[in-house]
Amino acid sequence: MESQYGVIEPQAEFPVKRLLRVHHKDSDLVVGFPAFGPRSLKENLEEMSEDYSHPTTGEKISFRKPTTSESISAIAYGFGSNKKVDAKRDILNPIWLQAGDIIRTQDGVFTNTTETDESKLKAMLNNAEKVKGIYFLPNEVAFAPYDTFDRGVQDCDTFVQGGLARALEHTYEKVAQNLKVISSPQNYRDGVGVYDFGSVKEPVSKVVTLSSFRGFALDWLFVDGDGWVVSDGSAFGVLSQEK
Picture 1 (tube, rainbow, N blue to C red):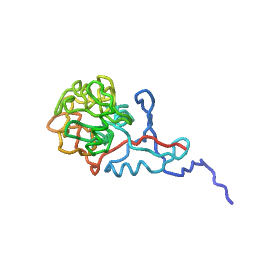
Picture 2 (spheres, rainbow, N blue to C red; picture 1 turned 90 degrees about the vertical axis):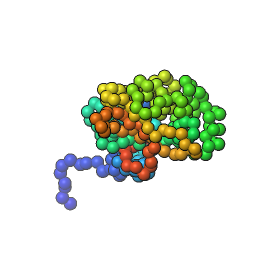
Picture 3 (cartoon, rainbow, N blue to C red; picture 1 turned 120 degrees about the vertical axis):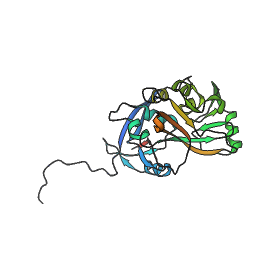
Picture 4 (cartoon, rainbow, N blue to C red; picture 1 turned 135 degrees about the vertical axis):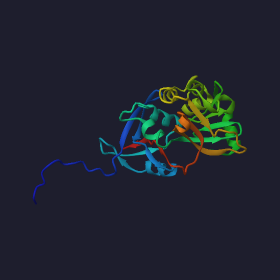
């Protein structure tokens, strides 16, 4: 048999997915890079749950749906830098980020749950820890009453000190630090637009999305509470398995 000379490339068992490591709270977070999409959330979740090969070891890996705070940590890295990693340029400017699950209710917004049974949601609050007006539960679930945050257009400081931003980041602090970086005047001259977080008669499951709004000569970070799973967007997948 004739020998084949030259570089021998590694043969990956599954498609190779690059990884991005970012700081997240008190540790590191590894997500697939680039983000999955743009597709519907259902399609993005299906894609991230498939098997991939690690870019350096070749081992089998897969990804899971992120929490809202994980999504925010992922886009905060390099945001607005115009360098290799820049979610403002690559995701929020052209389309939007599917940041995570929310439930809108008559009284406020739950993050990182898909539970819509009103009695169960109220029971969850009985076991919550209330900090600075926000109710915190395990698994990154939080509840921000409507009176803890402003809606409509607002400056960066008002937004990041409000209950919605702190619930999305699941932080006990007075300020949502990653969202402060993202929504800074250096990135969005005209502040933040918070829309579609109105009271509803019955709990409704939505996806919170983040995007850049540049219509009518305005420049906002657009935070929308009426995202649908069928709307095309991008989502980060968190590394969940490495064998």
